[in-house]
Amino acid sequence: MAHDSSNHSARGVSGLLSRRAFTLGLAGAGAALPLLAAPSAFAQSAAQPFDAWVRRFRARAKDRGISDEVYDRVFNGLKPDTRVYAQDQAQPEFTEEVWQYLNRRVSDWRIERGRQRCKEYSSLFDRIERDFGVERSVMLGYWGMESAYGDILSNVNAMPPVFPSLAALAWGEPRRRKYWETELLNALVIVQRGWGTPAQMNGSWAGAMGHTQWMPEVWLNMGVDYDGDGRISPFGPPDDALAGTANYLVKRGKYRRGEPWGFEARLPMGFDTNLADNKTRRALSDWSQMGLASIDGQSLAGLPDPARLWLPGGPGGPALMLLHNFYAVRSYNPSSNYALAVVHLGDRVMGYEGFRTPWPGGERALTLSEIQEIQRRLTALGFDTGGTDGRVGTMTQRAVRAFQQKAGISPADGYAGLVVLNTLRRGT
Image 1 (cartoon, helix red, strand yellow):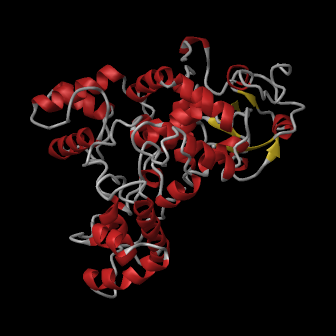
Image 2 (tube, rainbow, N blue to C red):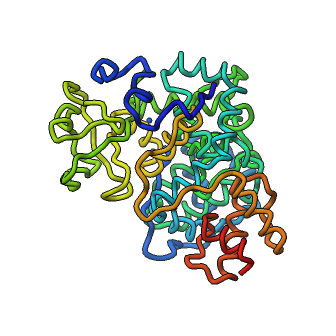
Image 3 (cartoon, rainbow, N blue to C red):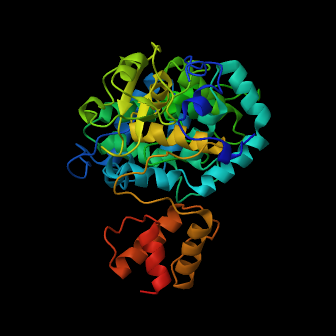
């Protein structure tokens, strides 16, 4: 159940930490989906034609127990989706400013939809918290980030078939070809087990599928039959997907029951920001001796728990104390920006405010009504946004990018921000 956000502050120690069973003593004192580094050029590099590669790869599939019937069902008529080589170069976790990355994903639409889902699936979240110890805020953060709470799973433009993508990567991506071959084999095993069909297995360019975007290896090894239907699936009802992701966090991320991910801190005047490297672990009491406190002024003295300090927006922006569970969340995708978006979205869904410290050089996120206004104005100008619901999906981003190009706005990055809104309002 969501709380009234006016009564809470993001990362405030009393608001965020003491509400959990694990409080770090502060009440009394005052969480694979691997991402790839971008290649220097389009990655396609194959030693043989695709058809010849498919014939040779059959032996690898047989060694994994794949029948000829399943192999033929998957590969007959399949064409490699070579668009994946370009998509591999432009991953937003590594190319966007942090404030922009957060604004795109921690939107009013995702917050409101998350609160609806939180109520709708309250009993499921109760069960996951009991069985795995992973808070519903974290699960809602993943669900909202990965598939807009399942809303985009039926959108073939956002979630195309994964076998053409995985086959293209296994055939022609030279840097991690062994990895992609293994994931393609894992996907074939899923079909062999009867857990999914090639037609059902839609997902991202990298082969991640379902409500929380499982890679095939995660589906096979971390999946949970949580709805008791005799099969494991990240599609359909969200039970298996959310439970499998919680299972992943506990077993691979070492998520700790009842512990927070961190909190926003206040730095003293003249603090050496080189110490905020998101690497060096110090006890909270040691950070306290350097003059740090929670954003609402509570002391960290006497607290032994280790934490890292991170300034995601650089000096002058929010200062975050990162505890163990932040890195448990990060284990799902090795990007601190991604992990921050997950936990921040989850906290906002649960009613906590945004960061108190402004982002240097950033701009505020647009409200739901402002996003809807952008969509209406773009639609009136002939740019197809796919609707005016306030959710910035693939079609809205394409429409914004096309408008930016026509209006001479640089960069034409598809970001629906204040510049686009004000330009539309001026009619220029």
